[in-house]
Image 1 (cartoon, each protein chain N blue to C red):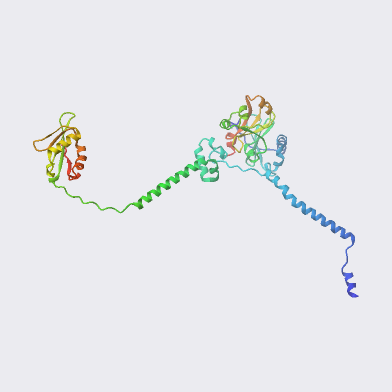
Image 2: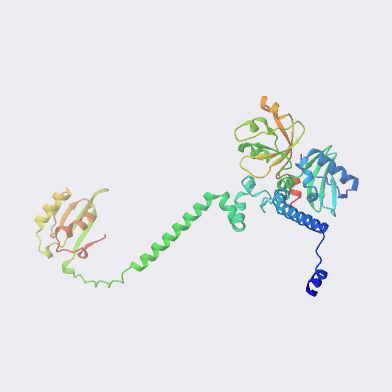
Length: 178
Length: 219
């Protein structure tokens, strides 16, 4: 999704109601968020948001010059740096070692990679946000949305299983290192 | 009895109510102390969950250190790791460490061998004095062309050492398998180019003639 970031608007401050809606959507999607709430959103912090003109309804949230998450239509998706700090936020799925090269260049995850020897599947439902790990590595590689239930994938291992939204080395990741 | 009266007035014994209150306070203090001992044991696992995990990112490719082999220039990332984090380099690339250690070991062995050779060299020997060879002892070999591919070699000067020419002619023609004849001037003529082989053969057969006494004359 983030192959090229061309039209970034100027940052605007989020109002109090906007921050409350953010926290509520975080709480409903990720039950682990309650214990970490004070560390991610400290009390006297500068919360800003960017808007993308080319893709509608996508906003990027920034807290004290640290990129935290981005929203898409109704879902809140955390940035990869957050997932590295608190790895218990998202459900983990593991992929074969031969597929790492393709995922880092932006392709989707296919079903045979999850069922083979090097991969593992955890129970998840359609439409949930999931983190992708590689065989033999400690840290997460990418974030995606499930296309079908995990039980259906075991019965019919064919086609695209997870749609990729954000991976290591794309333009969103390089924004945070400038 | 003044002492007994003074004792009674100074020291007042506490009443029954106060004794009960004191005993209750002591029990409460004991309970609080027990709870304090239990609390630090329960608090530790909660604190461990809240601490954020620290990750090291490569300065050149901006990826976590274990993903450096998938970047554009993996060798530059390796050299940066060597200088900054030696422990991680030993864990991630154990084969490269072994190769470097073997190279250093081989270099050290070579240096040790060179040093030993310098110590073992004996002192410089004195140069041998060259004895001049007079003309009365020289033996000459010449090579001539007969036709396009055929040569003639001539031996001269064997009489000076007291050798019979006819016997030498027979030996040479048998050994090298060539035709031979005697010149008018008293020299031996052989068919073919035998200059190099004659140089080696003569001092072995006649040890009185030394190598310095033989010379090949050019045209």
